[in-house]
Every structure is written in C-alpha cells, then in structure tokens.
Image (tube, rainbow, N blue to C red; front, side, top):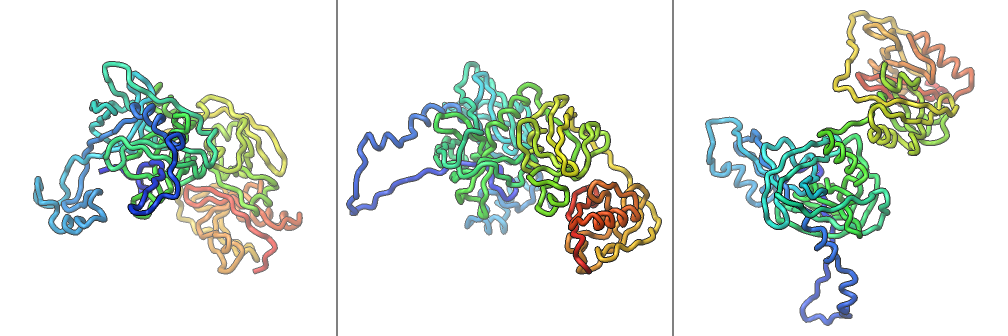
Length: 480
C-alpha cells in the first residue's frame, strides 16, 4: 500500500527516455562512448543516491471486511477479493475490523545528524515510522513535526554517526525546460532514478492554501511521495508530492513543492516543531474585468472581500473593497500572491502593502498577527419577517437583515434580472455598494441611485452568504 491524495495519486517521479533497438534492423548510427557519457546522469545519481531513503509507516484504521487493498484495485484479483474477502483470516463477527495498514513513501536526508524530509501525507497518523537507508539499514524514525497546509513533514533518525546528505537549491531560479532528476521508491520497489524537465511553474491544483507547485513531465507513481527533485547540479529544488491521473498511474503531469517553500517550512519544524505564519485577517477574491472597472483598478491585484474585526488588517485601517497590488517587494497579481507573502512572514513582523482605494494608490503598513486557533462566529437568528423593498430594474426585493445587524437582506430575486444573472440569491446579505456601507434597504437604494447619477455603468456589491463574503459586479444599465 502506498499513500495517495484524493484524485491525485501521491508521488512524483521524473520521466526518462529509453532508446530501444529492434533485432535484425540495422542502426542508422551508433553514438560513440564520449557522446553517450555526455548525456549520462550516472555521476549525479551516484552522488545523491545515498541521501535518498524509503519511508515505511504503520498505522491503525478501521476497514470494511471486504475492502479491496489499493494494490489490487483495477487488477484481475479485485473481483475475487470482493467476493471472498481475502480468505477471512482474523475476522470477527460482522462489521468493520481493525488492522494495521502499511504505507510507503520516500524522503531525503538534509543533515548528517539524521533529519529527513518527506510529505505530511506519507506519515499521516502513523503509529510507527521506519526509514530505510540506501545501504540497507532500517532505523526507527521520530516525527519532529508536520505541516498539512504545505504537505511537508520532518523526521529524525539516530544512525550512530554522520549520514550522507543533499543540499537545498533555489527553485525560484528554475525555468520551464530545465532538466530535473527525481529519485524515490515507486510502488515500494526501492531506489529509482528518472529524469524529465520542468513543464510549468506556479501550478495550483487545489491541494491547499499555499499551492505553488513545480509541474514536471515526470513519470510519477505511488510511493515516490516525499522524494527529492534535483536540478542539474544535484540540489534539491522540489519535494515530489502528487500527480494528476485519471487511472492512478503516470500520464506525464506531476507536481513538486518548490524548495523555497519547503525549506522555510522545514526550518520552522526543526526549530519549533510547528510552522508559524503571519496572519492578516482578511478574505480574498480575484479581480475580473468588471470588478476592476467598478473599483477603479487598472491593474491586477487581490481584492479584500472582507476584513475581520479586530484583526491586524482592521487595526491597520484596511477595508473591504481595497485592492492590494504589492506586498513588500512582491508584486500581487492575485489572492495567492498576497496569501503567500503573508504566510512566509513571521507573526509580529511588519509588511508594507500597496493598496488601491477609490482609484487612489496608498501605502499601508501592517503588523502581522498569529492565526487564531478558533474563530468566533456571530450568532444569527431571529424570527421577524422583514418588510420587503423593491429595487426596480435590478430585480431585487430587499429587507432588513434577519436577526438584526447592518446590511440589506435579499428576500427575492426576479428571474432573468441583472441580479439573477450575477448569481444573487435569497438569503444573501448586501454589506456594501462600492465603498458605501449598507445599514438597510434604504441605503442600498440611495447608493444605487447615486451611482446612476454619477454615470457609473457598474457597481461592486459586497455580499455575505453564510460565513463567506465576496464582491460581485452588478451592471446598472440593463433594463429588466
């Protein structure tokens, strides 16, 4: 059994090329020994292989009687196992039975004293973790710390002496087309090396809030998770993590965590056993063309959909509807850029933000906080039936916010109206029109009329739906 991540099969292994001759067919040309050695990665593999390890985990899980082991799924034995349940050894009477599943992944040693990097999803909630070195020794490992948000984990082994190591490289220097080498433990086979290229950078695959993957055309298979991705100098530029595959096997689309992100996480885990990230206290959304027009923004950025009361952003004077275009020396083209800049900063540090508000650029200094463990959510309720107020051509019927509080509650949305086209629903609460806070339906009507008088073709509405807050662009010129 090897770990996997949702529909992404766990592990990344770079893909190599193999030239095969056909018996009886004359070769067009034969490379000389010098030509062959010029393309060989043997020296590089020989140098880094001793620091690449196999990670084996044992955990406890409840599994159904006839659950099909991952290694049998899709094989001719799957139906047999479903029918007969693997022989019934160790079964009790009825219901799920406990067993100790084993999983395997990969890792690499970054310190001669025995620190090993792997993936968080490789170790999971393991009861025991074992590291097998390239020389065949098997050593028990202790989990120093793990970070589910970036899928990085750090182990510690005691070998009674200095261990071979690999060093970090700079993933920011990678270019699409650069050669890469991956090593690991595919399907539990043991040390395996393959090569490929960088296919893309900055990929977001929905794995977590800090997605920023290196994509490679690697031949990636289960068991390679946590293994190193090397550049041509033998430096670790990525941690192999996932593949995109409808079938669970390699189709040439693999992903690795960039070393610049993984290295910072590993340093925090080594020092504190956990990762400390800065906290701004906002929710973000991307800008589309109409929202940018409504907010007076001519460039990309991250739109603050809401600002949490009492948060660092609130204390610094940031407001919902602000658009952040730069964080420190990092350009912000979208929400992920701002999230990354905040997450890599320490709590208590200052971050200078370039903000656009009402079409005007300003600089805002923010002292970042520590993410709270729990968020208090304001109670909602109330049984009053609000009195509706129509907005005419926009197709909205509004009432006071149920349960009290500021905002105008959407009671009805006319079919085929501008509001319906933009996805407004009964139960939504309108908090803001542009930069005008809305305390009730009357404020909304007045703000819309003022925007029309100013000749604005579109306005930005801040909408709360459940616990989520976002902006939408609502055109004012459509007649319905």
